[in-house]
Length: 123
Image 1 (cartoon, rainbow, N blue to C red):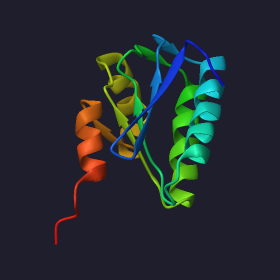
Image 2 (cartoon, helix red, strand yellow):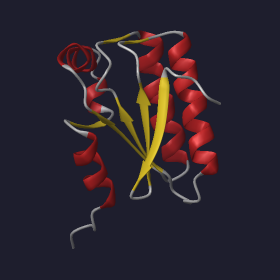
Image 3 (cartoon, helix red, strand yellow):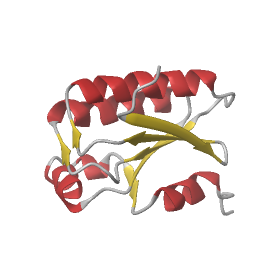
């Protein structure tokens, strides 16, 4: 699937989903979810690691919040990990108001999320 509104990249064994839109809603939510599933199907890891890069997003609707919850839940079933990175203030505020900030590990940057996902656990 190819769509100029979304990019997928891979770094250090982590799949990074980049919505390239300011408004993460409706059709984009469906596109993000299908892109995520396609990316983890082609990933060789038995426990996929995914970072959702929301650095371009300034608005997120309830359907898209549901998409993030579903992605995190589906990855957890696969013993994978899901993190959100790069949220701008309006999105951070929405996540806090809906208490979704308690459901996801969020990081200021994609690099910090990747570091967390790929670091060796401390004893």
